[in-house]
Amino acid sequence: MSVLRELVRGIHRRLTSYRFNPDHRADLRIIERTYAAYRARIESHERTRYLWRSVCQYRCQYYARSRAATLLANAAALLGVPLLLLLVRPCVNAPKERCEYLKINFHPAYVIPEAIKQRTLERRGARRYLRLGDLAAALQLFVAQGAFYPELLFKFVLWIASVRPHLDRVDARGLVQYCEYSAHSSLRKLFLNSHGVRLVNVTHGEEFISCRSAFSSFDEYHAWELTPRSVHDSMHIECGERFAFNPCAGLAPAPVLRGTPVLGFLWPAIPGDDLDALLHDLNALAASYKVVVRAHPNPKYANHFARYRDRLAGQCSDACTESVHAFIDRCNLIAGYLSAVLLQAVYRGRSVVYLADPTLASLRAYHEYYRSVRMVEVRGLAVNLAPLLEQTRCP
Image (tube, rainbow, N blue to C red; front, side, top):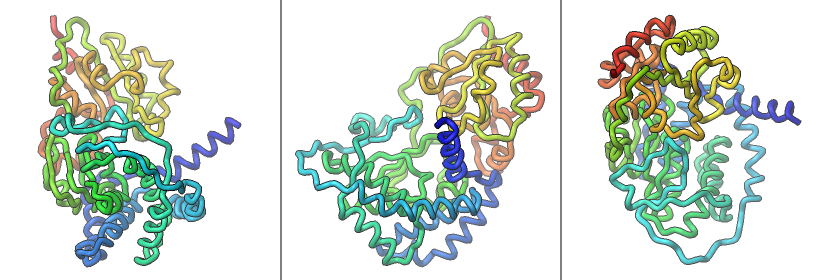
């Protein structure tokens, strides 16, 4: 049974694995080529424009995974579409709770901006279901437009099934989502708007020029304040209103730490490094400093951390049980590749250092914040980080 489970997980990882180009110029060429091909459809005044914006986003994401994975995912989705009928339930007639904003996504990284926090109702997930009309309308939209993208359709309808229980019980002006990476984000807007609800997107980290987010659509867009508007414009992201916010607003500065400096290290989320060499350097640092290593909370991005955990001389921070800010509070210096954790540490006054990689090099060409960050090479990490840790030492 365990072998079968691992096989299924392996297949799922291959079907859902994306590797986006670290050079933003390559992605910009794909985005502009797609825009030129679909410009008339996505700039029309018809409601179908949101389907075609989703198609554009989906097609841009083609290039980040293998063609075989895309074909298999669409074949599986095509077979799965009839099974969506199993989610159909009768209409629910119940008194509705009223609110301005409704949030149904729960993850430590999903922060509600302070500006709307007091006006946001949070509800835990409910059992998924659809109305027959939901499924029929989605099918009719794709068939009428000749858009044969089974995976996009399947994911869109599954999303409807996740929000339908809440729409039937809550009268909200806007639904808070974290979906700029979802190819069906524009379809979410189309569906919600047809029910008198606005799609409110809140980003959960820094944003780059990438095929991942291109052509998404929202009624409100809440972006971390360091993201230039030009990043969104270059990806043809459409939003009725755009707001900038500090994800750490209302939080106290990180406390002063005395004694032996503590290094917080973010384990690489993407394969590519020599993990044995990395472990050697971290253990070398642990001989003189305190080291706390934190892997990504999503097992998909853990990058074999479980294999190395017992061999680490330092401590581990479990991202599923220790909050980001508790981790930040106990470290003098935090190092890692591009991560929202590093930005939150900066917002709270901690010293951070970025590990050099091609994506960071590309960012430095167009993003003001990244031009000024401290950067070290991962090769020779112990030698590179030791002097920076000494600079954070407090008597």
